[in-house]
Length: 112
Image (tube, rainbow, N blue to C red; front, side):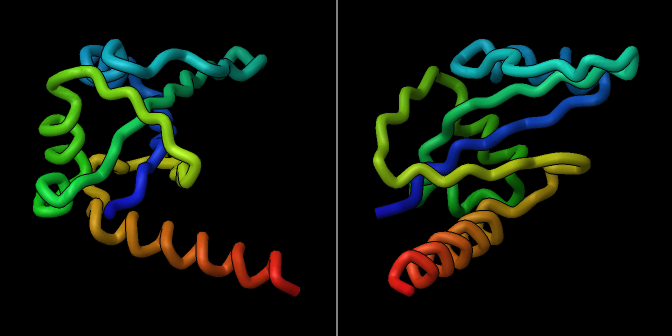
């Protein structure tokens, strides 16, 4: 069983915004905008990470692969991942590993 990841994709470039518009239409949407004249758009989309997706080297490829059709995630064990900067080059495997570390650390703190 693989984790369900909720990716928050942060855009500060109109080029990237246009480029990923198709992906966002399949489940994401604008969720916030800063109040300053320095405008940033924040988008969120849900992705279930499965074995095929894990074989993809980069998140960009995995997202393209997975988001060809809309995906609805209903999962109690949702992990939030904030992605900024050059998030397209992040490895799915690394993200899952880091998410699992944070999740297990959170469980330990609850037991104390």
